[in-house]
Image 1 (cartoon, rainbow, N blue to C red):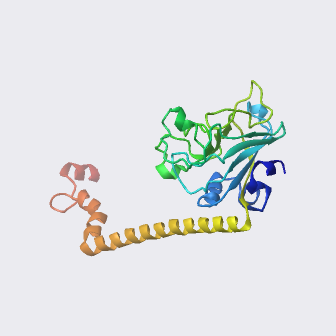
Image 2: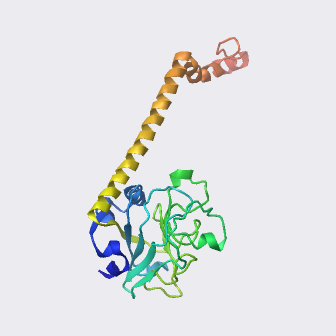
Image 3: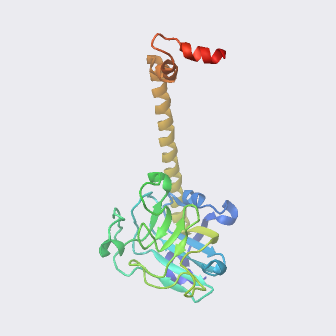
Length: 272
């Protein structure tokens, strides 16, 4: 396999499929759910449709690799310099590694920042719309490189604005898409997506346990929130507050004397 020589995790050990659009459906939400909390290296593979008639790219196979766990829902980039982008074909293969050195994990950059030092370390990005209810003004989906408003490689949460540009400040320059010319844009339509957990069997098993733990923590928070809401309702009900809220609109419909009598003029019009 062409990528085997690019990383030790890819050249040896096991490949475990985390997501396949063929098996799980073509859905970015399902994709994000499948990798959130996974605690090991992952390989993302994308095949785009031939959309040249729409001014987009031809069929392309490309993607990204990262060692850092997908453990953050954030409007900030994170990750490290083991992350890279690649194109497999049908045009010549290309691998685009980070331009800068260092293996320190980077967290907490403000995505509205325009500083070169920040944008040159924008490795990976995981920002679902539900995190901010869509009010953060950033791209919603999965991204690599670029900025949070326009990642270089971006899978839109509704698969409507996916793009893969040829340059940014984090990774080496080069095309991810095939069949591009001056009439094509960097946008593409997804035909298929796969995500694989890669590494030794023990690494993958530990990474899957980390994902299970993250899911259990999320479920626990939901149960606690529901329990809290239920408890608050019972407390309000026992104190009479719930009743006053539920029936307040009835009181507002009534006159000051508690009645709902019509005015004399209204009575006359009704009789007519």
